[in-house]
Length: 206
Image (cartoon, rainbow, N blue to C red; front, top):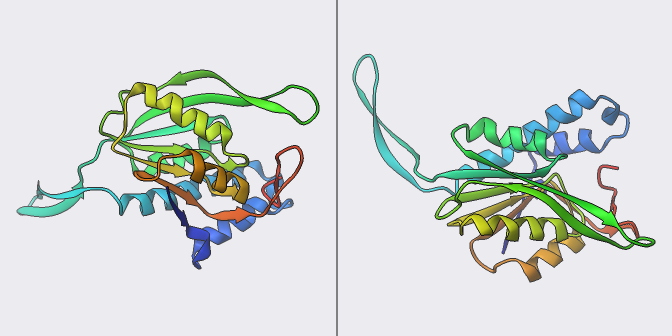
């Protein structure tokens, strides 16, 4: 699995992540969602550079233009509900993509122990397509792995891009062990070093 950390490079992405982390800015829920959509825009643009392109002709009012545009069929999948603004941000750029949704959540047992419960999955046939699976925060990696495996029941994509802006180092290491070694790219904006006993990312987003 390839890991791409866009936050390692100076760009406006880091400003949006900083505002999302800021507890005073977080009080403005509309701004938080807007920033998450912008983050989705940036990841979508970067992923678009990995797609397959070919030349097409376009008729303008004055002539014929040749333009290189993507050929891939894209499916944007999201783990409900926190990922919805991120999902929309990705769809802003891939506006002809199909959609998939996974309802997954932590179900606590005793103490700090929990397991991931998946109640609902809807997806088109993924065979040969580019799958973009988005989740705002990647704490343990378990829910993303389960969602990915559940989506594969609807076909094997040609390639997969995991978009997780705020991730823990533990989740990254977990996915490196449990995801395919090729054909899968993990896109992050920051990798935080601490995970609490409740599996909350620190400093994370709160």
